[in-house]
Amino acid sequence: MASVLYLVLRSREKWWVDMEGKSLGPFESPDIATFAAIDAARVRGDVNSAERQVYVEQPGRKFAMIWSSTHPPEIEAEAKRA
Image 1 (tube, rainbow, N blue to C red):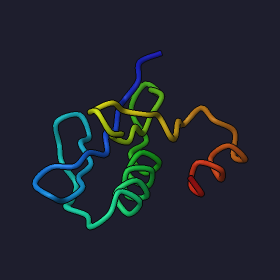
Image 2: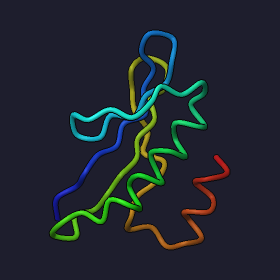
Image 3: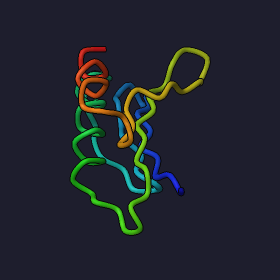
């Protein structure tokens, strides 16, 4: 199954969401940007039921997945608290 990626990253001292070439933001904190990315991924309703994944930039320009549309609801709730 194909995946649609939502990347939460820092650029020019602000936080942004990259949605496959389209940007959302800026946001003041990574938490606010992360919630916006998860909301956008839920609302998008991708064609072909592609899995949606949200990744947040970590130190060293690495990205960690914090949400996926394939996770059960209890895992989604934990991801929101992270």
